[in-house]
Length: 158
Image (cartoon, rainbow, N blue to C red; front, top):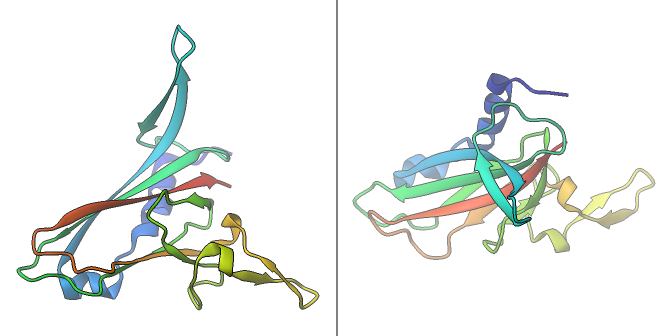
């Protein structure tokens, strides 16, 4: 099912709602969403291209990029970024940034391999990437005034 660009961008941009800590620390966020496309050239080599989404369909691989910059005059201490996963996107991973995740709507947090999901019979099973409802990065070091960086995570349109 094809999703028009406007719907796709609204859906995807909702994943970057600023957390209260953003205003308190004056950390500016700039986010982008890309569709990952694989092309093959004449010699058979594959290249990965990131394109702005015009429309997304189930199975499309998305890359969410979040640039941050401390626009304040002081270091931003104990800074946390929390991102809800768009409901139409299944979490795939976040590279080597190792965020903590929630599989219960943001009520509890941990590394994915430590979380469980309840089953209808009352038992629990290990959480899977498809269960992720939120992603969180908690900065261990203050972000210095003027300091900047980039975070990313990947998903697949359901």
